[in-house]
Length: 213
Ligand SMILES: O=C(O)CCC(=O)C(=O)O
Ligand SMILES: [Mn+2]
View 1: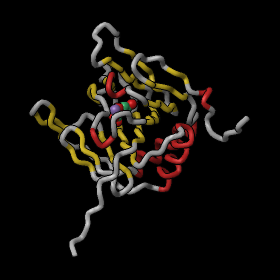
View 2: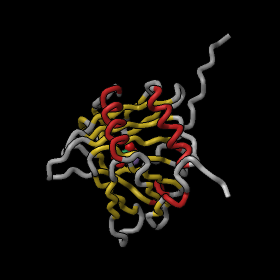
View 3: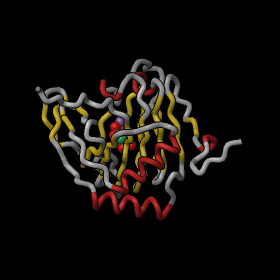
View 4: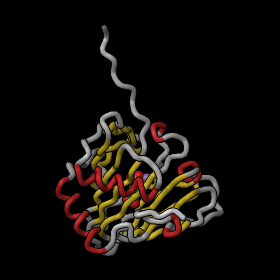
């Protein structure tokens, strides 16, 4: 029998999406710990709001974000090239706990702050080449409960799957999830407070720049 200080595999709930591996671990951070972590991260994170191009048109992103990671983990999405901010001691500690719970390694994290019910994230797959073909992505939710909607990319007969993400929960997307499903956070009409989400990822390190002799 192996003893683990971290979340045992049995606590992960398999959400049963076909052609995917999506699991939820509720209570990764519970109650006060999740609230304190959210307040500290909201205050220390260098938040940005960027314009992005979608179908040739420019929009301000409907949320704030920050990209944190190892120096060689720059990342491009929706035409935005993100150069990583350095890890804070708090994020390094959190990464170690997330890695232990997921039995995976991460060299970067995208933080998103949904300020209220009008903030959102459009349907997308995390399928950028630098994430590799079958990325493992661990997503920690803090604060207001929002619904993550999954839609199958090839099968119109499958209904969208809606997953409410409680504060302190960890969602794992692995296997061929990004090949077959898109996901997103819809706007809501009911007034909502803030939610902070962190997606831990492994980005193929960019080759170090060689200086010429
Ligand atoms: O906020 C969420 O739960 C989703 C975040 C997400 O899909 C992403 O950062 O790629
Ligand atoms: Mn995503």
